[in-house]
Length: 412
Image (cartoon, rainbow, N blue to C red; front, side, top):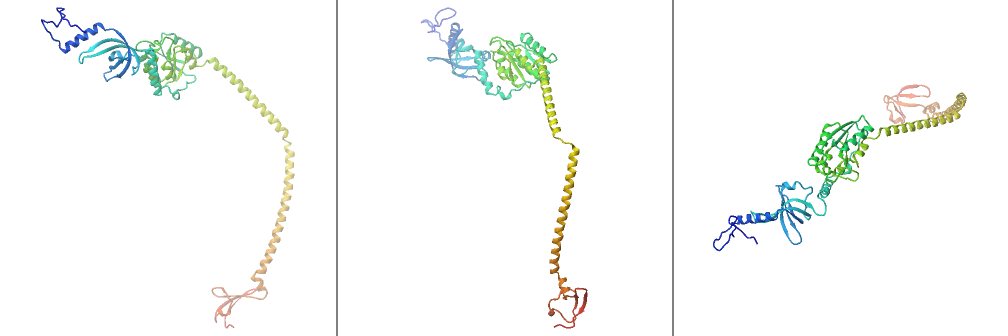
């Protein structure tokens, strides 16, 4: 029960002699002041429900346990510092103060900081962003690009004061000293580091002369590596037109940048080894391939020589072969002539027989036996019946030898 007092006289507001009344606003302000003076720094454990974020950016939700609940609010300024996204049903630890929203007389818990209960805020933020970006396809294997062989220009986005850059330059220099290296120095931890890393990736893409890019830093705690878990860095890597190798921390460290990048190197040193092979190794491979090529050529030549010697043994004296072919040609010519003459004789015999048969059927043979052929002029019709003739018709009579012109004087 709240006991109201007069601040000027420290006497009760309500006395038998003098009755003083408070307005609702005064009462609420009195309650608010009392709550804030006594409950101004608290850690509260509870479960989030009815979580909502209006356009103002403030977070409104209810904190509850199995017996009670209280309305809570986290203003936008404090909310932007959260590493994770609060969700309904999430068990959290909230630091803040209890006060009264005097306009409506609502009791509220004003949250200044929040942590997930049972796991760190950074780990939860990492898992939430990982799930979100994977659903959008930023980790899809089919979008990963192959690294160029012997890139001419290599971009590096890292701190210019860290050991990682020293290792990268040393290994690249040992392998190919003539490679062009473009360094974009950035902060790799702390406030604003993620933005700088994203801008560095964008700047090297805009330069347009980079064949491959290494983005990373040396090892550290989860907090130290956190800039490479920020969404802005992940989207900058995804938007890059240049293949990117993520080289963050040690082999056991994994960041969101590792999942989005085209290739992940367990350390910056390994990234330098991935981007360029050792020149000595390449020269050794060339030497081995050269030896293999020479052996293959020698083997091919020896095989061809053996084949040539085999063919040479099988090949006889061409002059003897020519004489044999000439003799064979003579034999074929004689045989062809004989066959031609025999065929010609057969044709002659057949022609004589056919001629005899045709002669027997020829009307000229009939004429030779004393018969004649009569044509009626002028239409040259053969006369077969005397009845078809009229007195005075002109006729041509063909004999076995010669013809005569006649005129019909009578018919029988």
